[in-house]
Each structure stands twice: as C-alpha cells, then as structure tokens.
Amino acid sequence: MRLTYDPRYNVAYIRLREDPAEVETLRISDELNIDLSPDGKVCGIELLNASEQLLQQDHGKLVVTNTQTGAAWERLVASA
View 1 (cartoon, rainbow, N blue to C red):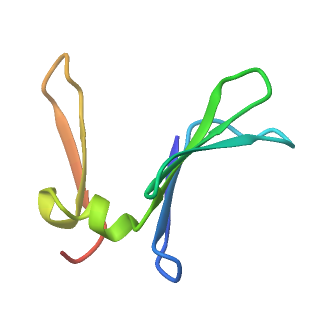
View 2 (view 1 turned 30 degrees about the vertical axis):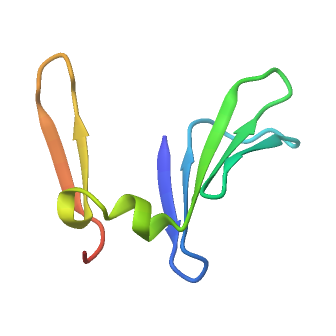
View 3 (view 1 turned 120 degrees about the vertical axis):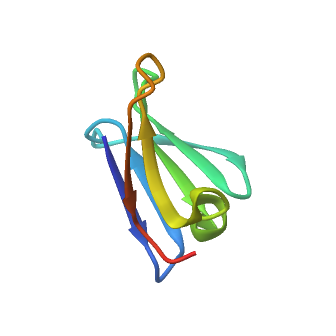
C-alpha cells in the first residue's frame, strides 16, 4: 500500500495494488473516487480536496494503528 499526495492539485491517492492497464473509476462523492480493476478488486482510493480530509484530525500526522494490539506508528506528513 502506498499513500501519495500532490499539493499542486490537492489530491491524495491510496494505492492498494498495482493498477492494471484499465480501471473503472467510481465517483462516490465530490471528494472521493475509487478505482476498480476489471475483476472488481479495489486498486486505489482518490481523495480530492485532500488537505481538508487528511488534516482534520491528528494535526497533520499519519497514524497507523494495529487494532488488535493497540500499537501505533505515526509520522508528521504536513503542517496543520
């Protein structure tokens, strides 16, 4: 999994698997698109107006939490 952010367009993309040559993009809302492979698997999630969505909580930190153990890892990714 990879999270990328393009500040020029204020778009973040969470890539869950390598994109096949062709994907179908489902527009879920004005701020969310999901890319599906031809076999229906989710390839990625696109967040439009990303800074607003990503920085609302955790003050610009990316926090990854293991829900089973409670262990957390965090990294500052942007200024809030």
